[in-house]
Amino acid sequence: MSDNNQQSRFNWGTGLTIVIVLFVCATLSVVVFLVSLDYEMVTEKHYEEATKYQQHIERIEHTAALGDPVEIELLQETNAVEIRFPVEISTANPRGTIELYRPSDSSLDQKLALKVDEQGKQQVSTVNLAKGKWRIKVNWMADSTSFFKERNIFLY
Image (cartoon, rainbow, N blue to C red; front, side):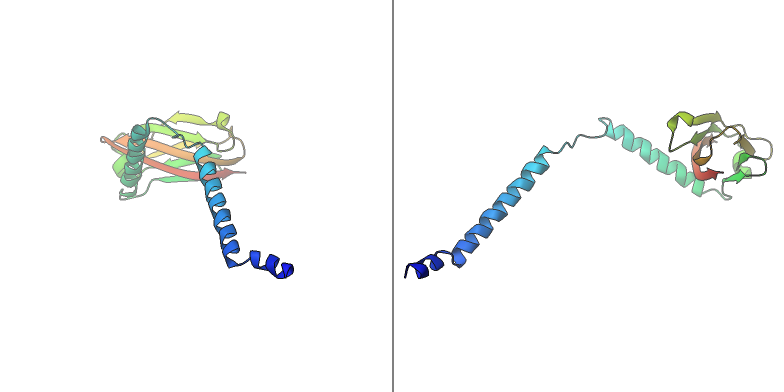
């Protein structure tokens, strides 16, 4: 009879109690873990950063709304990157910068002034640039409107 008595101690009520205790322990463990995470903001000036990002989106939208696209093309035969502006931009005396951004090594990044010729083009030599991936970023302003265009290129 004592053997039957020991079996009856572990019944559905005991199993349910064990499951509930394990669930509470797991929930408390997750809560403790989440509370201990560092959730600092990336920047304390989040409003200013959001405003800058919105301005960046507007520059991209202005560029997309142009009648003819701004083209950034790698010219292998002349070892240059050519940036071609539509007539509506080239006649408006655009001013701005060209950034040569190297994702793998920021020490190779370069920033150049935008100097568009009469045909609405500017060439940037790639002779002294390291082989690999580059991101060409063009920021300019024409007739008090800001624009932005970027393109990835790969130098061999």
